[in-house]
Image (cartoon, rainbow, N blue to C red; front, side, top):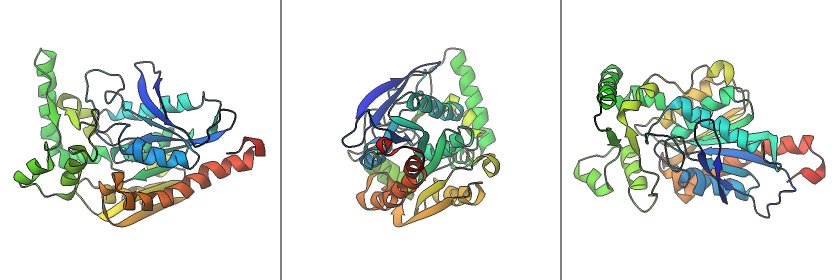
Length: 320
């Protein structure tokens, strides 16, 4: 693995490049862009779990930090801006097509949780992406209009506007911590919802905790997400092969619902919903059994749509 800084017109995007075994710059490889969940970072599930696993199968995998988050640039911090989150994918694709060992016609994308919604949305207009996979993918815009705004998006927007005005006049930034400080704190508060507790157990313990995976949000800059929809125009623009992996233990963040919706709506002729039975949203982040069940479907999916394409178009000496 190597860490790189990807240049953009506004700031650098930090990314980890996971390389296949026995990697050689004289060979040509398929590539996958791996996108992290909301409030996460490249060192968590998108990189250290799925990125590493896919690299071992022969893919060059780029796990990147979203703008305003992790080690990437952008101020103020902790902004979750869907427009820029999608634009980040384009800049990572720009980087990949400059690498002599990457086949520009064999680039896929994998998104986890909110990264799944962004991956789907990016693929609609970024035609260099040839195959789309998601793991417990969620439509962040829907979440903002529903549970994340207490099902009152107008009141949330009014509060965001008021806070932004206050900050423009010199008030301190309001940065919300989106999770309890620990599983014990969640239990003490009487919280039992499976996704909220799963997120707390992942992000607030040594299981998944990292310095950059902090799950914080700048409240005044969340308005754009309220008006955004990851699946808008998917009936027309999402045509790439699509694989959606979800767990059947349904939680409030709605990945199962979103997975069923995008499979039903996408224009893709090749699309498949994979339901991992007995596991929940956050189980699919890093627990060996559900992750292996996800990968046993994702790996052949990406090979069929990226590697087989290379084999049909490239001379034998250029194949992985």
